[in-house]
Amino acid sequence: MSHSKEKDNLLTIRGLRIEGKSGDHWNEIVHGVDLDLKRGEVLGLIGESGAGKSTIGLAAMGFTRDGCRISGGAIDFDGIDLVHATQKVRRGLRGHRIAYVAQSAAASFNPAHRLIDQYCESPIVHGVMSREQAETDAIDLYRRLHLPNPEEIGFRYPHQVSGGQLQRAMTAMAMASKPDLIIFDEPTTALDVTTQIEVLSAIRDVVRDFHTAAIYITHDLAVVAQMADRVKVLLKGEEVEEADTRSMLDDPKEDYTKSLWAVRSFHAEAKADISTQSTPVVSVSHVSAAYGKVPVLHDVSFDIHKGRTVAVVGESGSGKSTTARVITGLLAASDGEVRFNGHVMPTSYKQRSKDQLRQAQMIYQMADTALNPKQTIGEIIGRPVQFYLGLRGKARLERVRALLDEIELEPDLYINRLPSELSGGQKQRIGIARALAAEPEFIICDEVTSALDQLVAEGILKLLNKVQKDFGLAYMFITHDLATVRAIADEVVVMQHGKVVEAGPKDAMFTPPHHAYTDLLLSSIPEMDPDWLDKLLKQRGEA
Image (cartoon, rainbow, N blue to C red):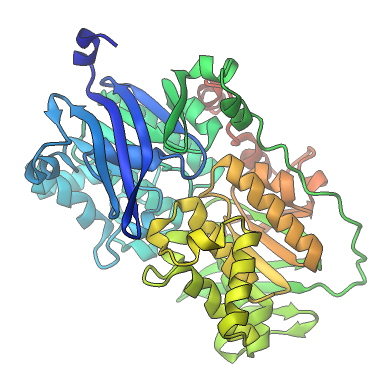
């Protein structure tokens, strides 16, 4: 690129090299990457877990995580040298001219402060607007991002809203100071497909209206097709190829890029029909539940048999995870019952025996908040091995190493690491290993692939399928990704507003006619077509 063209860029990165510390040694993890971004342009960064997407996105702010350092190259933001700028200069830019939307909103908000207080902090600190103006602006952005009750939701605390709502509130917070550049790091990972449509549309409109440049980091190729003008593909800290979005989708040049385009081919093997006379591993019967005085589940019923996977789908706040909480005893049902192998389970986990607790395990959606940041991977996986199976010393260590092998993480490399030293996908795999450590009969998978790139997600689905086949496990698979449902489910339960609106075998659920709400979910699955979002919004009269 010529010097004159570089002058047109808002952001120019040349020969970026970043090192990560492992023990006493520094190893290079980003190897001489270049990047150009103009005002109002959106660049998509894609690649599998560990490719360096988030590391490069953070470097665009002149920032590196603990244990990382910029070891070479240049980062120029609107004439400011971010590599050599003082900390004061860099801090003055962050939250003002450069903003960041993290992958895990739950780990990014202060739980002790209301959403609107956290929104208002940045524009007030940077002198962009007054408190009164910031509150008015917050309500407007909450409305544009389709948050419910925009005039009131800001006065809630982070734990009082759903994961999808929290992610949208974080997107609004990043936009508060009308920055020149926003780094979106998997901003729709936690969102159901219908909410994702609204958020993608809102993000695109705000970026366009304010002529904001953006780096959009994602592992979802269909999403990047809707959002990015250009796409850069990364692998192990190196650029594979870059092109405008349409050219990249129509004619990828490199074999690795073609392999990304070819994923989602996995489908679980068909399983023998389960006799209706057999006793389900888990039976949810006419369950209702409430948070305080607010009813959230209404007469929910379904069964899960040995060796079968029931996918529970629905929008954020539909009751999927709340049903899981009732099954595990984390929330007491106000009516109905949960049976395990025909036996009624105590409503509270505190009343359940160690063996009852062992038999039902859960893999959580937010690996960032589910893993103890002060424990090593060996300690995290080893605790349930010792607690449930009574293994200690060498036997415990051997079991932990075997579990790391099962989730395709090399034991010698990972057993002594902390969660902060792992990528998002690697953290989620540790969550899976921790659940398997108890040798359960039943596992609740709560959005277990939502944080994973498509290649890794396919591997995890294959792993879950293999483990299920080997041990006859029953799965409740909570997800908003209907492509995952097609790949792994035997039966599907569709929930809306705390009720089951449709349920049945997978093939029947994907064959018309559908319940109107199921049809809405199916029509909201993004496609690998840059015009898909516009066509959908026009069809729904929202363009």
